[in-house]
Length: 172
Length: 244
Image 1 (spheres, chains in turn orange, yellow):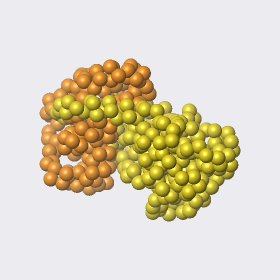
Image 2 (image 1 turned 180 degrees about the horizontal axis):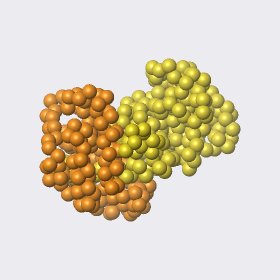
Image 3 (image 1 turned 180 degrees about the vertical axis):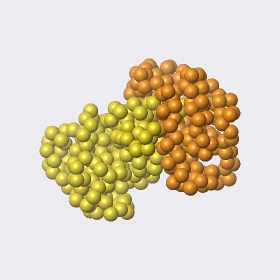
Image 4 (image 1 turned 90 degrees about the horizontal axis):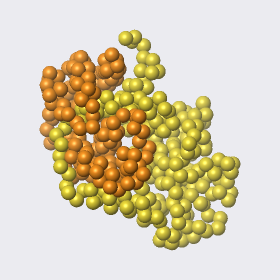
């Protein structure tokens, strides 16, 4: 990432080769349409190129930073173009399988994955589902409330309370 | 755990929601503005980016079109190409600020990193005596222009023209400048429904340059009571110079 920050085109190409399919998957799950997901990935990599010099390795894995950029880009794209209405809602199931369904992501420490799965499991099912689907599907408070059938205020307070509980559990 | 939310809890929950993407567009922009200067907020975001990133494993990887990387490179090269002078002909002495399209196209033609810096473009129009030296288009979240800011160093003035729909809000818009490398927003004044011109000192004008940010927040009538933004930031953007 430091090399990309110095505008090293070869390093940028390597970074793309190593991460593009994983990041496109993240965008696809949010926008559900390949061409929109590719547009989101395009915008995200352009942003990575221009902002790489500001990335601080002490902050954590570069991929975690790139995931945020891709997710933001994907969420922007769906807020611009109305989301497909015929979208199939795959509501996230039981937490028991969360660790199994959460594939290892190269570049993200395995301990982080196991720790997060454990702490998510400590949440109640409703709040956990909201946090997981907000991240994985890019759903807003309103979309979560409507699609999961909870009052909007409940969804909002679940998410904030769950984040604080996750923080507590993860630092334990 | 105490039920009383502390400032620390508020920051961590805001940062977590920022990373999840569940903040409203207004709160998202407001938090982004805070992130520019607030190291605690930056650290809180980095924490959640790292801690939530394993959830990316829920999505199945998908191979991008082989041509996508070429498209990315093309965009970057286009944005990096230095602007050439005289590519955009703007008639002198017309009220060019009425025509946002000209500025937008000028900026795009100049190869500015519009996509990378969505929000605001500050460009230097063709050199001509007495005219404004900088023009900025301040967009809302949907990309529609809302304000046009022109800075005229010769007369030490900044003028702001409303070019879009004013926010439908009892609060009033206030314009802020955050110079590069500082964390203190400087109020440039409250904006009205018509052209607003403020006289500013030369030092301040000199701070308007690359890396600076202009932002509009909604404040109580009369402007922010504290001297810093108190309401939601409804438009903001980084200043990008047009280099002829």
